[in-house]
Length: 125
Image (tube, rainbow, N blue to C red; front, top):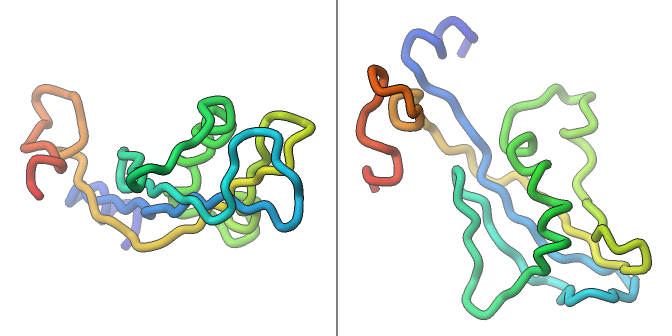
């Protein structure tokens, strides 16, 4: 779809993401358990029962998630680079961000503008 067609029907797409702890033989200092994951579905972080993530490590990952959800040019580093390091320089923990399925949204389901609102997307499920 062209940008103009998207503007006309108000649709846009975001990738769902899987964020996985990887160590690849490195030793973590923080609580990083290899293979633990959480998902990003729309604006929601979805944690599996019993899994935990350090708030400091999460703070390093969070700013990148909205950009990873969007289409990017093939040569853009956001399309090719997938791992984010724990912010502790002595920690070997990494988070691998993988794009999974695309999810469709509309402007009217996601906006806060009073004159442009419809039922929020999260109430439609």
